[in-house]
Image (cartoon, rainbow, N blue to C red; front, side, top):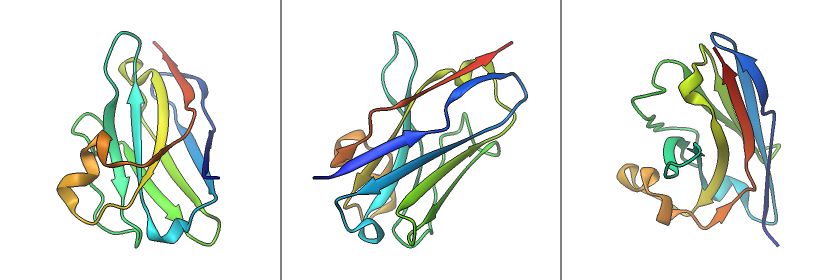
Amino acid sequence: QVQLVESGGGLVQAGGSLRLSCAASGLTFSSYAMGWFRQAPGKEREFVGAVRWSGSSIPYADSVKGRFTISRDNAKNTVYLQMNSLKPEDTAVYYCAAGSIATLDRLRKIYEYDYWGQGTQVTVSS
């Protein structure tokens, strides 16, 4: 049974930082691309960034480019989302996802991902 478990969310002031983790089990982690998405209240789930199985080719959403960094540790079956210079508009539930995705353009597509975590809340106060 595949499980993705996010952690590290919380309440932070604008300008602060958080590091989210997503621990995976029940799959060959190193074979999957990992994505981060977020969903704010009343809005659709949106792409944040992703990383291929090798750690290369990381596309980010324009809204987080230069502030967020994704990395993965295949030995620990974990993917991370380092979030710096947080803004109130970053407030959302953050989800990690795993997919057998080979091409760059598909990494942004929600429907390309096979497995999802339960999400972790990030709240940025002004």
